[in-house]
Length: 259
Image (tube, rainbow, N blue to C red; front, side, top):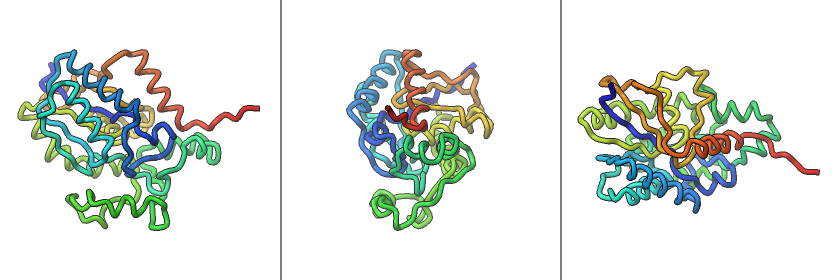
């Protein structure tokens, strides 16, 4: 029998999701559809009678804004929102800003899938010649981290995302859950995938096949050791959810050129 409930949420669609670019640590806002997704998520959770005591987000605006919109739609704007870089999206290094479909055309869909979905492959690191390097590392938000700015990642595999996320999960989030707080984590595709891998014990191979659509709440029902008592539930219209998953998976496919 479940003792705890935990909700994970990949933020609503962002501006660069539309352009099919690796966004990563570049601070993009939600698109119009992303705003709608977040509000619809909040309405769905309200209709199901869920309430939150604490919300955790990354330091990126799309994660924070999603949390705000969800809480507003639930009539729970007062709920504390706690932010940490450790919930940030995976750092894609030198791939940041590049178009996934164009990369698939140039490097092959298999290689792009490895960069996007593999567990332990790290993309080439970002350096000062990259057009977004200073936009990221001169951003004042990263002076608030629990590590020096120079020790922040320059590129990450999913394994490295889990490595930097786990201390925050174990030392900050888990104690809140275990004292009976209803928790929502509004984060990103890869930070949520890394956490799912840990909680559900997903293998290094099988995590490649886990795809999370934007704006869809995931319910995890956990026992006293925070292990699942039943499969994760993606809440909402299941047909729409499957279409949204396919849309995310298709982002890594080469563009088809017409005659």
